[in-house]
Length: 301
Image 1 (spheres, one colour):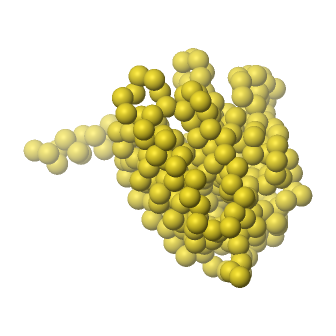
Image 2: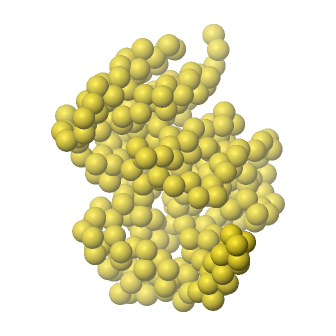
C-alpha cells in the first residue's frame, strides 16, 4: 500500500469550487491520513453563494483515498476572521499538530515533506511558533533550509497545539506589548512605526484580521516563524471575489525546489536582516516614493 501522509491536514474553504478542487487534487497526491475541513457559511445577501458553498462541501464528501475526514461547517456566515481561528480551535482540540491550508494557497508537493520534517525538528522548542511554507522575500539569501523571523507568513503553514494555545483573539495582547516594551524589543523605530500604523488601522475599525492577531500573539511570547529557504506556496486567490487579496501587485508566487535532506540552522535565532527585505516592514521613504511616481509620470509622456 502506498504510504500516506501522517501529519493531519486542515483545509479552510468557502465559496470557490475551482480552488477547492485544485486543493483536493494536490492533497490526493500525498493522501493525508487525517483531513479536517473548515467551511464558512454563505452570506445571506450574496446571490448564488449558498450554491457555491454547497458545491465546495460536496467535493469533500468524495475524498478518493482512505482517510479520516472531520468536517466543521458553519450554518451561517462568520467571516474569515472568526471562522479561521474558531476552526483551528476545533482542530487543535483533537490533534497536537497540523498543516494548515486555505483553499487559495496551493502548496508545492515538497511543502508537505518540508513541513513534516520541520514539525518533527522543532516540536519541543517553544521558541518556534510556526512553520511557514511561503517566502515572499526571495532576494534575501538563506544558507540553511530556513531562517527565523518575528513576522508570520500564513499562506500555507504548520503549527502545534502548544503554539496555537497562545492565540489571543482580542486587542488586550496588542495593548500589553506596546505598554510593557515588548514591541519595542522586537522592532526598531522605523519598522515599529509601520507595524503600529498597520495594526492600529484595523483596531480602530473594530476588527483586526485573524492573521494579524496571530502575529501579535507570537510577538507576545517572543515566538518565531520559520521561513523556508525557497517559496513552496502559490497563492491563487487574487481577484474580485477574494476577501483580502483582490490586487496581486507584483506578487509572482513562483515555487522552487527545496534541497533534501534539510540542512537546519545551527541555532534558533531570529534573523533580523531578513526583515530589512520585507517591504511591509520597510516601505520606501516618502521621498523615494515621490521620485518613483515622478519617473512613472515621465514615462507616460
